[in-house]
Amino acid sequence: MVTKRTSEDPKDAGGTRRRLSPEDREHQILQAAIAFFARHGFEASTRDLARELNITQPLLYRYFPTKEALIDRVYDEVFVRRWNPEWEEWLADRSQPLRERLLRYLKDYARFILRSEWVRIFIYAGLSRGGINQKYLNRLRDRHFRVIAAELRHEYGIPEPRDESELEDEIELVWATHASVFYIGVRKWIYDFPTPRHLDRLIEQRVDVFLTGTPPVLKAARQR
Image 1 (cartoon, rainbow, N blue to C red):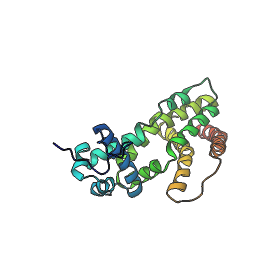
Image 2 (spheres, helix red, strand yellow):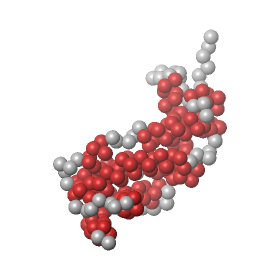
Image 3 (cartoon, rainbow, N blue to C red):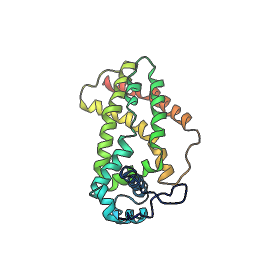
Image 4 (cartoon, rainbow, N blue to C red):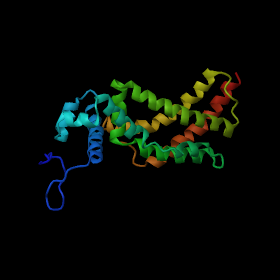
């Protein structure tokens, strides 16, 4: 029996196409889907994705039985698998000054998110697949923003929030600084607008602004 080889199978050193293993084929489809959805958004069809890969749609569905299953894997690959679990440890490490912890975290986080596929998929998801954004932002809020707010209170002697509204005020201030780093990627990959050349220096300035301005604002609010 002769096995049919598809044109996208890679060639070996002798120029003969070798058949991809199921694992390699799945990885190839997944990586192509990430790039495809980053360019076209989640409303684009799997038929067009299969055409770009030069495979049949039934072959694509052999690995990902539905478009939703494929999108779930894209989410996992882009937003979950590349998540650094050490971020939470860095932020909570009170052996280091809070400024140093925030700088280490935000500089590393910027390298994680400031990529074309990450920014564009996140924006497209917000427009058509809100669940992806909500899952990710809830994770960010619970694991990072709340920790930063707690560490800010500890380092600067800020009174504990008296109610949920005051806690939300803290988180909003953290979120605003955090989002300013993400917005650099929006400027570059969405608006096609020049971005700062010295990213680390910019992050240092924003952390200093946050730590200089936020504690007195929160202390004053807690005295009312």
